[in-house]
Amino acid sequence: LGTREGEILEHGTGRVLGTHRGYWFHTIRQRRGLGLAGGPWYVVAKDPERNLVTVVHADRLAEHRRTRFQIAEPSWIAGPPDGVRLEVRIRHGELLLPCTVELAGDGAVEIELDEGDTGIAAGQFAALYHGEECLGGGPITVPA
Image 1 (spheres, rainbow, N blue to C red):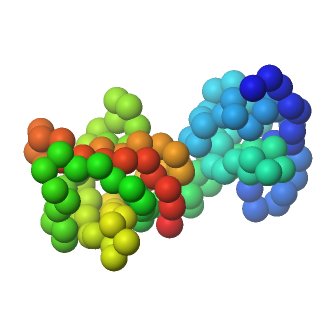
Image 2 (cartoon, rainbow, N blue to C red):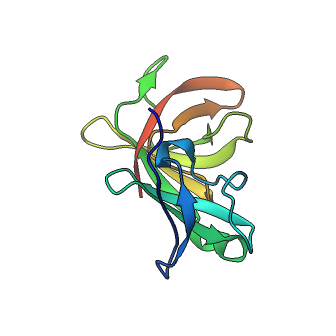
Image 3 (cartoon, helix red, strand yellow):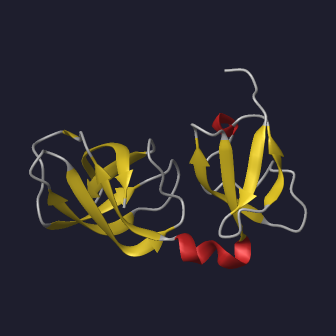
């Protein structure tokens, strides 16, 4: 992919805090490697079209919690569940998060977490579990 310099902006103010070598080098909720003073800072958004990375200071990170997201094209091991209590793993190595799953009319799945999470981003993989059994999952396509 190479490198392409872009700006790192503070969420809410739009203030330029620094530069980066390409938005693709950063992930949502990333803290390390930003090279910004006065932190800790966390990545909360990326704009691929404008090559921008948006960050928020740690003391405002909780304001960026999401409780809902969607999987547009889920894959199921034994058919889709609907309206049931499950658990979801959003990032590798993270804990399972309690959630409710509802099927949308177009085959997509709406996930509602019991408690918000600050690291949900489009393109991440979400795996749904009932106890220790993985039922299926897919890439997050529409963070709500």
